[in-house]
Image (cartoon, rainbow over the protein chains, first blue to last red):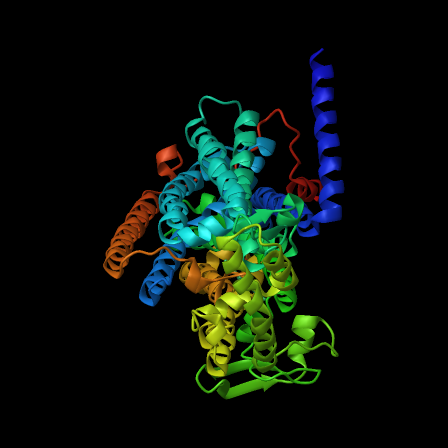
Length: 70
Length: 537
Ligand code: HEM
């Protein structure tokens, strides 16, 4: 039941997004660009943050290696 | 009834002053809310507590800023009624709807969710809290959307028509009002300008921490996210600035002429005035430095396109004023007798130039006796104060390009994870904090000074729009506002600086835990090199 409700919720969201995209795409191209662009900017910035953690972990692993080598 | 010129000037100064104060707060809220959404998204997806600390710390600064933003915005809504009552009566049917939606969004949706966001960390699940943070971001930007739709109506009145029987403008199409190209590009330009502002702010404060070796892990991550956020937002703000200029070229040619210091019409391809010293009295630029071809390219996106100079626009205004005279005269007849069919027909024939007739009424209260000199004077009024608009525009664009260069450099260093060693860049980042705020204020000066002499472009002149207060009342309230808002700014600065000095330590993170070791249950990549060497013997 819970899964079904989630399924319904996501379907409603998907239909709403498609509707919004269709209306905004036709009448408000810049509004549409704002929605898509904002999501993109936020996600790229978030990915940049997560990438920093990976870089630091990588560097932390490299550091003992460097020490061992010297 | 003629409103005293000094009262109109004081009403304008009061609105400009309060709007400029208010807009010191707004952009930071618009952008910081989405940056918070980015930080919390990382927290929820990776589970690393440092991102929670980041979201909480920057959220606290957002809260301070939001509270003062609302306080300064509140009084502006009332000013429409108190100082611009004729304007409010004239366009209230259209202007009122978006303004009310904006108020509802800001005070109910945005404020409620911001409260939940700041105080709900312990009460909401991770997912719920993230949803709330995203709703704060959308709520604040969508409330800005409505006020910008209202402002765009003033720049390019679409979706409404003047009704001579009710003597005011009435809404004819709500979709036309909200999908107005001016509203679209203005909203995105302004919202994204907010993103740029927040990115510079977060990067600057983070740089301050890194310079002082405090909260370094938190600062490094905040800086990285802000730099990526900022570089994309700056590209977007410039793109949308270009789109706005393109819209202006078609719907507000007088504003464009002022922005470009364009007194005389020229053949294509038109040169661009990089630097100029415009003289309103002499109707020319006293000196200028020009770049060939560039203006045609910038504002028409072609080498063969042209835009009219002030001279051609003034000539056109003379024709429109002459055409507007019968419209105003018919309106006076209709005011006395709304059923006069001849007056109604006369009005309909000339209605599109009604606003231009009003321009002349300022100098010739009895339009039957208007002289050629009065007509010329009214026509000259259609050119906004060129030097102020020209230079405000140059300041905004120059700062936009400066911020682009800055973000490109910071992204390069932060992606290599070397930013904390580049002391000069960190110092620059701190000094960059005021830059977007100045660009924002300059942007509004372009938009609003460039709209003069109209409150509603081509329809309602500013000289008619104000309330009939006394000079003393206006001067007194202006001083009151300036003092009060200066106190607000001082309070904001004090609270912000105090919160920044205190830092995120309050939330249990005194400097950041350093890179988190992955939980032992999750797959851990083996450090291959040492093993390899051991095996090699
Ligand atoms: C660099 C290229 C840029 C261009 C070509 C540009 C263009 C414009 C134009 C034409 C306007 C007047 C809009 C109107 O007619 O009502 C405007 C307004 C404005 N600009 Fe810019 N702009 C640029 C950069 C920026 C930057 C970097 C910021 C701030 C970070 C900014 C913030 C604003 C604001 C707040 C307004 C007033 C609100 C509005 O009308 O959108 N602009 N800009």
